[in-house]
Length: 158
Image (cartoon, rainbow, N blue to C red; front, top):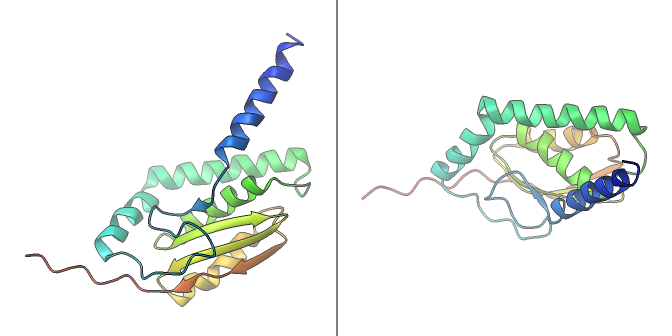
């Protein structure tokens, strides 16, 4: 059993590292990186589908459960210890996804510095980004490159 434990732990860490590659996005419509030129959000009907998923009770319960589990794990390990960039990206993305349901945001993190790009529908949502991101332990600074861009009007039906 003592020989098996390190192998299992190594496997879990490797799996976790592989799962955390790439930018964390709050929706499929979000830009692919925080430096990508911002485009007008997709038509309102596409946003409604994404918002429906983000605001469903099941998704909110799942995201809140994930956030609580991460906070508990962080408290056990000392909380503000060196945090993996992938963990920060994922946690900030989850926090933003639950609290800014109509945004198309991309999150990147490097050594505690978090960058959030993409679009949000209102100035109020834009103002929420930095305080929400700073609630995550290990986030030292937040650079918000996201902009306010209301959804494009739905295309007329033929």
